Length: 107
Image 1 (tube, rainbow, N blue to C red):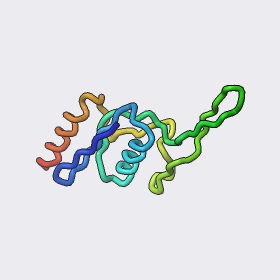
Image 2: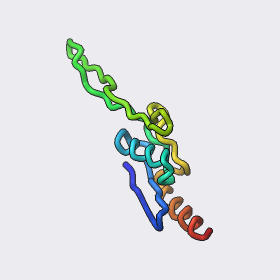
Image 3: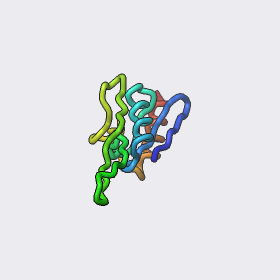
């Protein structure tokens, strides 16, 4: 889960630890391109979507079938998660972003 807040051309993206794949990709890209300040918790680190493959006798294998590699960082967030620019617990992310906006506007 994520939420993008843009006030006076200052962008803040809130992320939660259980944010995965598409939202992580969006967060990672905005962070790498310096288009938003990421505020919140480190995400779960699921960068490689998986597919189910029947391996017989009632067993399934979940095997990654793609990767999202940033042309800027030359890597992804698999296993590490998207690490926020400002790390705070999810329930404090909005308040922290407001503080950052007020501070930025006063400069």
